Length: 196
Length: 422
Image 1 (tube, helix red, strand yellow):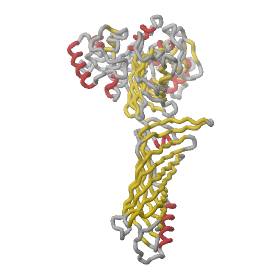
Image 2 (image 1 turned 180 degrees about the horizontal axis):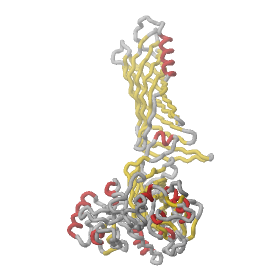
Image 3 (image 1 turned 120 degrees about the horizontal axis):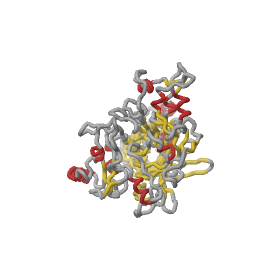
Image 4 (image 1 turned 90 degrees about the vertical axis):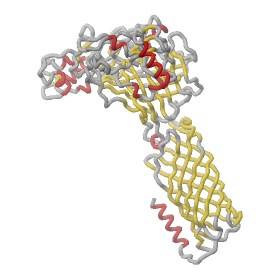
C-alpha cells in the first residue's frame, strides 16, 4: 500500500504547481495513465478467493468523438501476493467516456473487452480468460492547458467460463478444467494523469 | 424406515407414501428405486437376537428394516434404544443417517445388500456378515483440504458424505476376512459425486496387520470365502503382544490405551468398467478406538478380551493403570467384568472416518453403472448379482489435491445400554 500512496503523492506533486484555471477542451488524440488500489476476485461454485487490496494500474488512449464523447482503448491490471500465491487480473477493453456536462470534468465510462485472471504458486496455476465489461466514473481536474489529474473508480466483471488448473511436476504438466462457471471481478480506485 | 416391514403393512404403506412424496426415488444413489413390498427376506434380516443385557425383542429389531433394490427385506439403521417402547438393543450403528443431506437420495441403507448380491454373482464365494458391524457415519458440507498452494488459497470444495462400513471389532471375523460391505456416498461442490455399494477387499485375505507395527502382517487362517480377492489397503488390528506392551505397565506408569487399542481399516475401493477402465476410486480409513477384542494366537478362537487385562497382573508385576481400566474395574471395586457387560468401556463405540481422496475418470459417462459386488465389470445395464453405482460424468483425476477430513472423531456412540458385541 505504501507504493500506492507514494505514486499518488508524486502525481499530485507533479501537477500541483499549476494553479491556473483551464477550460475543459477535448480535441484530437488523448491518452492517460493511473495508479491506485484495488482488489480482484475469481468467482465460481468452488471459489473462495480471499484477496487483499493491492496495486492497480491503468492506461488508456483514444480520440475525441465530440465534446461529450471520447472513444478509446483501456488496459487495467491488478496484482496481489499473499503467502505463496500471486494473483493477477487484467482487462483489455474498448471504452467510451461520456461527459454529461462537457464544460466540466465529470465523466461516466463504459467498456467491453476481455478479462484474464491468473493465480499461481511454485507448481500450480489457476487461469481463466473471459469476455467482460467495465463501468467507471471519474473526474478530470484540468491543471494545465492540456493535462488533467484524474481520480477514478472502475468496476469490471467478466462473463462466466472455464477455470483451468495446471499442475507441473517432474517437467510434466497436467491441465484440467475445475470449474465452468468462473467469472472475474475487480474494483479499482486510482489517480491518473490524462493528456489531451 | 422402521415400518417398512412385512408384519406391519399399514405402517409400511404410510411410510412408503411419505417416502414417495419426499423422495420420488428413495434410492436414487443406491441400488435402484426400491419396490414397495418385499418379495422375500435377505440373509442379513432377522439375524439379531437379544442377549442377557438387552430387553428389546427380535420382532422390534426386525421392524427397523427396508426393502432393498432386489425386493428383499434388509435390516437398516436403528437407534440403540427403541423410542417407541424404550427397550434397549445393546448395540448401535453409528450416526442416524436421516440427518444426512444425501439421505433424500439414498434412503435407508439396506445392511447386507452387497453380501446378498455376492451370493448371486458367485455362489461359491458367499460372504455373510453379522449385524453388529454395520456402522454409519456422515457429515454435511464438509470443507475439503485442497493443500497450501494456489488451490487451497483460491478454491474451496465442500462435500456431503454418507458412508457405512461393516466393521466388526468384537469377534475373530476380521482377523482373517478381508471382505466387508462398504456403502459410500459423496456429493461435492464442483461436481464430484459417487454412490458406491460394494464388497470391498481390505488387505490380504487370511491375514491382518499388527496395530503396533503396520509393517508386520500376521497370517491367521483361511478367509471366508476361500476365494476372497486380494485388496488394497489393510486392516490393522491389536494383537496380544501390542496390547500387553502398552496396557500392562510397571507400577507408576500409565497404560497407553490409545496406542494399543486402535484399529485402522484402510480401504482402497474402485469401480471399474467391464473393459477394466477405472471409473472411480475412494480410500477412506475407518478407525475404531477401544475395541472389545484383540488377536491372541494362543487362544482357541484367537479372541482375547481387552477388559480382562484390567484385572490381570503379569509375573513381573506389570498391570493396567489408567482411566479406561478405572472405569472397567469401577475404580478397583470389581474383580472381573464380562466383555459384554454394558459397564465395560471396551465396546468399539469411539470411531472416526478419514475420507481422503475421491477420484473420478468418467467424463464420457454414463452416470449410472452396474458392477459386480466387488465394483468390477461395470456395465450400463443390470445383470444377475450386479449393484447399481452412481459416478458423476466428469474427470477429476488431474484436479488439485482433494483430500477429505476426519468425520465422527468427536462423537461417542456409547451409553444407552450399548455393549460388546457392538
